[in-house]
Length: 178
Ligand SMILES: Cc1cc2nc3c(=O)[nH]c(=O)nc-3n(C[C@H](O)[C@H](O)[C@H](O)COP(=O)(O)O)c2cc1C
Image 1 (cartoon, helix red, strand yellow):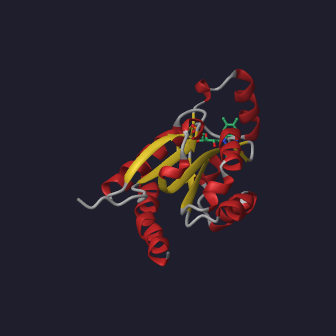
Image 2: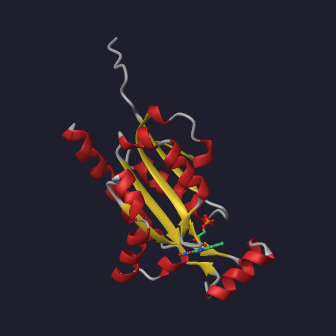
């Protein structure tokens, strides 16, 4: 029997999510990718142990006070060398992204340009999130009410699906180029 050694079969969808909405987006994306034939692990960035086993990676973070979650930032810094050698895509989730105008998308992309430079992603997903004040501590609730962020679930599952469905083709093009 011919056994191929060193062929990586699996992809990783990893995420940072304090209140769960980004985790659900990550799970949904992983489900779409699995339907397209990928074998996918889905886990929080804090639980990723061995990146070397993966053929490609998706990294997602919610945006809090204009930053990625600290856990995602630490993950990227700690794994930068390995991530540089992997085809990858990133996605971000935020309430400001309820507005999907080109202007808002460009503003958010510019705000997080550092990750584009560091990670050279094949694709970047920018998705509206969900916010429920009863999940937040009184202090955070006050801060956010002051900023005028509304409550509700603004996730656009069809936009998320369309983005996820575009990924296998993009990843395959890099693999063919190797
Ligand atoms: C403390 C806090 C700060 C936030 N700051 C921003 C922000 O700067 N920009 C934005 O677009 N959304 C902001 N949001 C909205 C979150 O990005 C959104 O609710 C997201 O879906 C949360 O993801 P999670 O459920 O995975 O934690 C903030 C939410 C919280 C709780």
